[in-house]
Amino acid sequence: MNSEFSTMSRTVRDQILSRLAGIRDPERGRDVVASGRISGLTVDEAGIARIMVETTPDRAAATEPLRREIEQAAAGVAGVTRAAAVLTAERTPGRGPGQAPRGGAGHGHSHGHSHAPAGSAAAGSPTGPAAGQRPSAPVVPGVTAIIAVASGKGGVGKSTLAVNLALALQARGLKTGILDADVYGPSIPRMLGLQGRPDSPDGKRITPKIGWGLKAMSIGLMVEEDTPLIWRGPMVQGALDQFLRETDWAPLDVLVLDMPPGTGDVQLSIAQRVPLAGAVIVSTPQDIALLDARKGLAMFRKVEVPILGLVENMSWFTCPHCGGRSDIFGHGGARDEALKLGLPFLGAVPLDLDVRIMSDEGRPVVAVAPESEAAAPYHAIAAGVVESLGRVRREPPRIIIED
Image 1 (cartoon, rainbow, N blue to C red):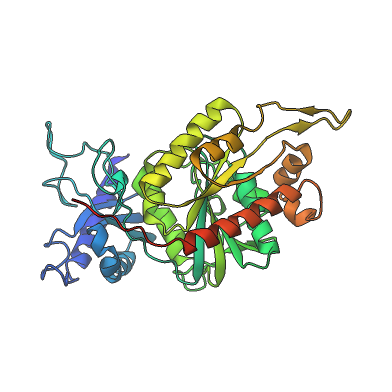
Image 2: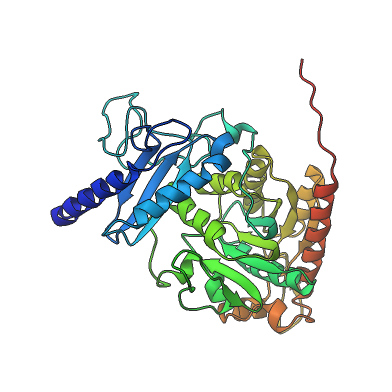
């Protein structure tokens, strides 16, 4: 970072803090800076201000109007191109937005470490929401149900499944959208044939792109396709919060969330902060993929997100020349795992060259050839997802009696 930008950044930060000092904190009776409500503030070279607003999981909904006021105030400061205020339930001890990190053991985070989003547990901590308590997440207006399509590892065809599942749900008459939560490897724009930045009529609300009838949003629409994003967890969560909150999704029956692969901090934060109706777990049949799929299952169960079922992708391959079938990655592993865990098995999808080619061309098979043999597994999976959603909603509440 050059000294000129560093000086400019400090000046803009000071101006933001001055503006925020004029906002009263209704809960603490002082302005939001003096009350310690602002637990972090950064301004990058593009003029994007990111503000951490301290709250607690049970007060997140009540703090939302204050968060919006803080965001709007920061956005009006000269030199700020965009402001993003994110609620957080953790602050660095003894540190405010204008203070440097304190050194030594036991004095909080080191420089460059991030605050955990509201409702997330500290890494490695056995307590807090990640230990089995899922904080209430804000409902996305106009969206009836949000379902996550997830995998314990990359390379199992999760995004292809997510796109074609969304299209198959749409084919069943449901108003459907898809949000690409895989910030580090966004692929939904390519798979739906989408290009260009989404519109924002008022500079605040985002109009989603439409691909094959689906409302779609992705960070891939905001940056060049070959530009890597080097973001820490809170920055990713802040962007996803904006895509959920500020995109005009309504009205939707189902919003499909294409999760990033793995079970790290970003995935956990999403699972905790997004009001998920359930999750679909994608795996290949091989043992190593199933091992990672179990980790994904455990993560969702830990934050009390219902599992809608398992999908076995790349289940077999049929040679286009001789018609012979090969179980390249094994076969039936995900089905066996679902039976063992008492979970619905939503279906098996073969490894199909045409599906891969059409996905790369932005022509998903369910949209282009909905009656084809290749599209049939996705329609069956969509039927299973709808059935599982109905089952989850009909389940009676559990009564737990403690001594």
